[in-house]
Amino acid sequence: MAYEVERAELARYLEGHKLKQTTQRDLILEAFLDAKGHITAEEVHQRVRAKSGSIGYTTVYRTLKLLVEAGLAQERHFGDGVARYEVENEHHDHLVCLSCGKIVEFECDVIEERQEEIAALHKFELMRHRHELYGHCESCRS
Amino acid sequence: MAYEVERAELARYLEGHKLKQTTQRDLILEAFLDAKGHITAEEVHQRVRAKSGSIGYTTVYRTLKLLVEAGLAQERHFGDGVARYEVENEHHDHLVCLSCGKIVEFECDVIEERQEEIAALHKFELMRHRHELYGHCESCRS
DNA sequence: ATAGATGCAAATGTTTTGCAGGAAA
DNA sequence: TTTCCTGCAAAACATTTGCATCTAT
Image 1 (cartoon, rainbow over the protein chains, first blue to last red):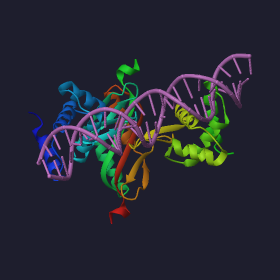
Image 2 (tube, each protein chain N blue to C red; image 1 turned 45 degrees about the vertical axis):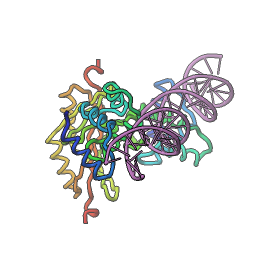
Image 3 (tube, rainbow over the protein chains, first blue to last red; image 1 turned 90 degrees about the vertical axis):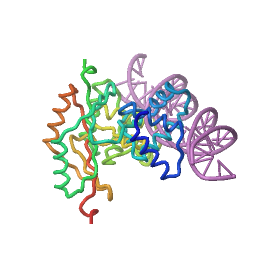
């Protein structure tokens, strides 16, 4: 039994909102966490099916939305028309390949600092940001 | 007759690719430029119709895609399922106020440099980027 | 017992494509 | 007169919703 912390967090959210714990929700949470980053609703659906028979797309979509509301997941759009979900954890930005869609995460303290400076310069209280680099990865360039 | 520069740029692209100049393409370019900012395909369609009778959605979509290829426009997705197009004028990044929606543009050489370094580190050829800072502006904080 | 969850099918909304007729080169 | 464009209708997608049925509480 893995992901005790996340399960507990979801359970807490469900209780607090008078929602029910179901096998499907558990399976989807597990599949989502197993993916470790940037997974689409369809991939979640496939993973759950692979492990334990049938589940509806509808439920996958609804549950992913629920995970976002519960603060466990974050929804992202990279411009190809498909939503991707990732674990809502510490901060990182993305490098996206325009040819194959590969996504690499990066972090840069220098940039983070500069962001704070820019915000301060314009007297903004910085809440969050979004920073994506788009290009062609090594294998797509050859 | 406005937007001579942009018209010429598009004409150059069309010629170079053995494509044709048409009334529709001209009208769409104009409507797009008139908008001065993030415009959706539907808004372009409406604007063109308002000015000069009928035009098909298909043509709007195809032409906006053409403008992107010609380097005149940039396609953006903000996560609501609708693509938005904006004028492709170099690097300006955005500082967005979460309360009043005010948008301030900024530029930072240090960040630009770091971006190149990060891309190089991952062996990506950097094509473009997207960098948005979200927070609360001075007047909204009081 | 009952509020809530599921999953199919159908609807939605955006964008793309096939194709016949039309316009630019 | 050939090549490319247009625009309708239909298709293709991802995602959402209606509803009858089922399940957790």
